[in-house]
Image 1 (cartoon, one colour):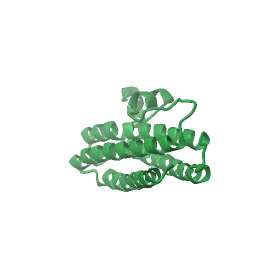
Image 2 (tube, one colour; image 1 turned 135 degrees about the horizontal axis):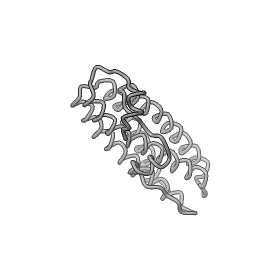
Image 3 (spheres, helix red, strand yellow; image 1 turned 60 degrees about the vertical axis):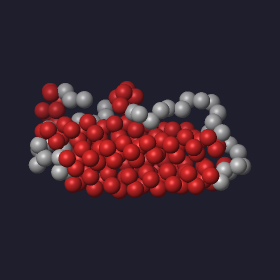
Length: 168
């Protein structure tokens, strides 16, 4: 992810040091990629929804997509504040993401809910892992950001779980 010519021009001093910057950047950048991937998947499902719960799911997916999108800039800017480089392209997102794309023409509404539930649960777990890296390097600011995002992600998963349990 680092290019020494670019990173020297974009270097941002921080109190945590180069080792921490590198470790934290490597922990956070995949979260940025996953947030992009989950945002697109959530919007995909929002746009291609059909069935008796259309309005409720349509609104839920849109609200969740907005929340996911809001995480992206905060995480990427945190990497930059530490002097690291972050996502440059769709290609880098594809390389780093662990959230799988869903390119099927049709996915049933209940399955959409289940897929997004699982993706949010997995994202929360990866955020917890990144949180540990940040704690090891005494980066309280990034750990704090992640704590909020973990809570938001768990809330999304909870809503999806409850919606899926009651789906027809």
